Amino acid sequence: MNKLEQIKALETGKGIQYLLDAAYKIFSNPIVMFDTFYNLIMYTDVVNDDPIWNELITTGTFSITEQEFFLSERFTEDVANADKLVVMKSAKLKYDRILGAIFNREHIKVANIVMVECMTPFGTDTHAAYEALADKITEEIRNDNHYNTYGREYHDTIIKKILDRQITDNGLYTGHVQILYDGFEDYLYLAVVDVMQNGMNRDRLAYFRDLLKKRYPSFKFAIYSDYVLMIISSKYDSFSPEGILGGPENPFDQNNIFTGISSSFENLYDLEKYYNEAIISLKSGIANSNGIANKSGRHIFLYKNT
Image (cartoon, rainbow, N blue to C red; front, side):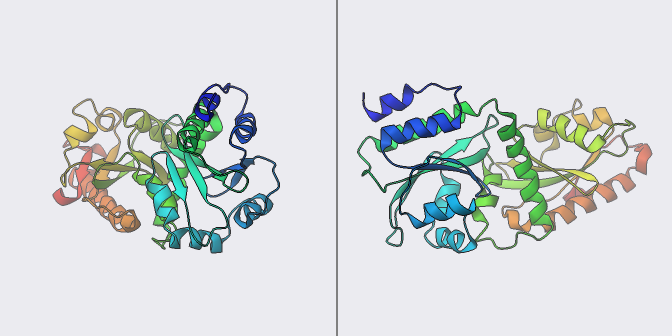
């Protein structure tokens, strides 16, 4: 069998380490898996002289120096925009490598697998076989609660870091932030959802975040301050609540929760500005609707209408 056939023949259900070790025997090159925060997950225990490999295996992550190198060589951008594979070539690398993206059940990119060409030259069938390996590992983690939770929490973490100004370098952090764009259209909106007017006693923020996630699976969510945040996208530079959030059966009207929505934007590094717009929209909208009583019946307020 060729490499592609051998990879496809590998059993699932035996774990990531089994797949990596089996793939090493097929490709005769070491393979490592790390998450989207550059934390080491698993690797094939093969001694080699690649300095970047050895740094990752020894320290469990990539140094800022290495991250800046990936950025300067455009690897960060290539990986962020890749659907499946990226070939990493540079005169500054001791060995070429190939990277495959790993997705969870919700199609959120949660990890990468990298194979280093330090023992056996890549062949004509390497790319197709390696893509099949990435698919195989994606299938392996499909029902893994860790990776599904990690994907959702990744969005939450990055959104908070942008709003708290912990991420301000739109070069170095491009790879992290780019994952928020996955599956989005051209124009973005930020919705700030106030759930405190609902009378339930349980954890309202977590409850309504989960409820809204089920209703709007393509949105990106975070809990920030006392609000549920939703990043929404549209093909058009205009917002139609009925088209995007639903008509009379929408969860805002049904549950007496309110949302303020920003104007459109494209750059996620400007999120703080549009958060402030959404807050203004929310607060002035509720005030103009006679507060908690909301005699107007409105629960969705757009920034341009306030």
